[in-house]
Image (cartoon, rainbow, N blue to C red; front, side):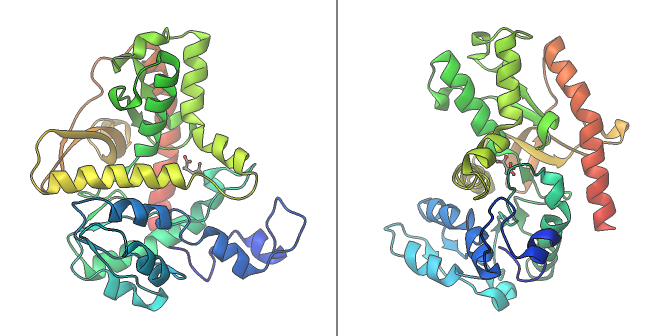
Length: 320
Ligand code: LMR
């Protein structure tokens, strides 16, 4: 979802234009550019999942239309779209809330540049979730029982490594730990079956790690002002959501890296951390530690921790 008020950075609002284009754009163009950009493909993917019995897309614009469209797909799930003033209604009786909300980056921007805007959107949605569906399993903001997803990094790591190792990405899982911004993204390539395709510490390994850490920038630059990852993001969100639904239904042994309130580095003041997490009927079942990692990977973890701590402190300060 996007918001009518304050959904774009102040300087875009002031100039009423996309920063990377000379041409003036109406504010409504900006909304339609960002509105449902992840939510639309995500709705399509989730409607195709057998485990989704009811799908309730919500946004300030366009959700009923998206719902009418995906409703025709020949899978059993029901679909009802909710307009801007129907958020409370959309949340009645839900089991899982997926929040792909936010304003996308433009070339030259960091995720931090959009922090206040996107955090405000998530805050308002999370408040509505708490008001209407007090016990759902949300796949966005990390509170005690609500995991947040870093699956896009996992998907990228698997795809990029398999491209080098010439393996099937589906058979090349990579555990990615830490957070989801630059150096906080730590791929544990040594733990992957194809990990030997890149020698730890080599130039090839460094380039692969960098590509995984800055995969978001690769897409932002390629889209050249038209936004950030939406399709791969939707794919990752659908993948995680489907695994979560399986776990909620009681399927055992579902483990995926997930950003959660975690004891792993709590002693160092880092309350949230993504590591391999077993999902179960109540959401988070077991948080795994990092396992065996190489000296080079330990260096990546060491570099990630201070940055992650700053990210988390910023989140806490915002919430307070
Ligand atoms: C990504 O990794 O693609 C997303 O976090 C979007 C972005 O701004 O990079």
